[in-house]
Image 1: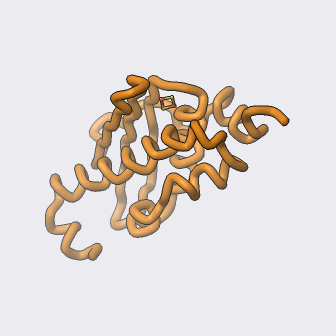
Image 2: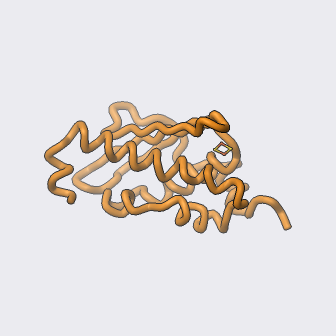
Length: 131
Ligand code: FES
C-alpha cells in the first residue's frame, strides 16, 4: 500500500489557497519544535464568514496537504465551523495520514485557531457576538 493517499499527493502537488492575504483580518502561525516545520494561515472575514483563506507552509508533504485541505474545508464557512475543525477531520478528508504523520495535521488545526484568535484580539466586539 502506498504511504500517502492519492488525495494527500494531489494536495501536496497542487496545493489550494497558497499565498498571502494582504491586510488579513486574522493571521495565525504555528511551528513544530521537533521537525522545525512552520505553517501560517491568513483569514479574510466578512460578518462571521471566512470569505478567503490562504496559507504558507514550510514543511513536509503531510503539512502542505493538511494546510491545503484545511483551507478548502473552512473557505466560505462560518467562524464557528472553522473553530470546530479538528486535525482528525482534516486527515479524514485527505483519506488518512500515516500514524506518525498525524502531528502534521495538528499544525493546520492550531494555525486556524490562532488566526481566529488573532481576529478576535483585533476585534473584541466580534468575539462576544460569536460565542
Ligand atoms: Fe513536521 Fe510534518 S514532519 S509537520
